[in-house]
Image (cartoon, rainbow, N blue to C red; front, side, top):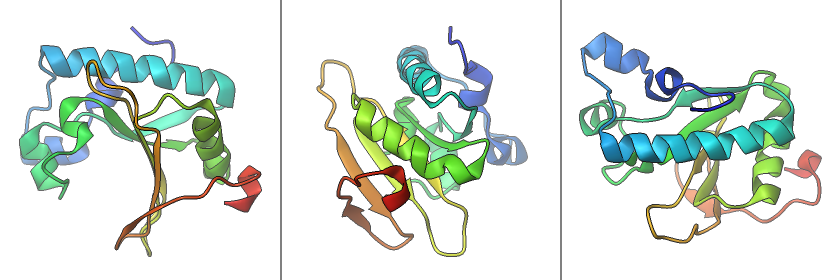
Length: 153
């Protein structure tokens, strides 16, 4: 299915386990998860470092339990929250995805007092990727400007 990512890591959720919520993909979600993993495989090849999926698919009940927005692309199997194994490389990973393009949304999430991560999503069926790049500080989303180098983020 994927060179670097497994379906089990794309559907794993400690919250789902704790609350007894099955987080199993339907046919459409599985199709999107496969496309998302293919996209992430390309990112991982270019990044040349391990990437950890912190959140992938979230069925509606799980999405609500974690406080996700109702129209989250996670619910469709189109999004993943990721971090590099070496957290010092997070901004490099963000820059690689930005340069690579082909994403629907790329969000650098860094809520105050919490760890940071990258949200990346793919477009829906028969839709062109928006290429939207945002930053979320825990309170609001803002459009990010393209940095010259990863060190300027």
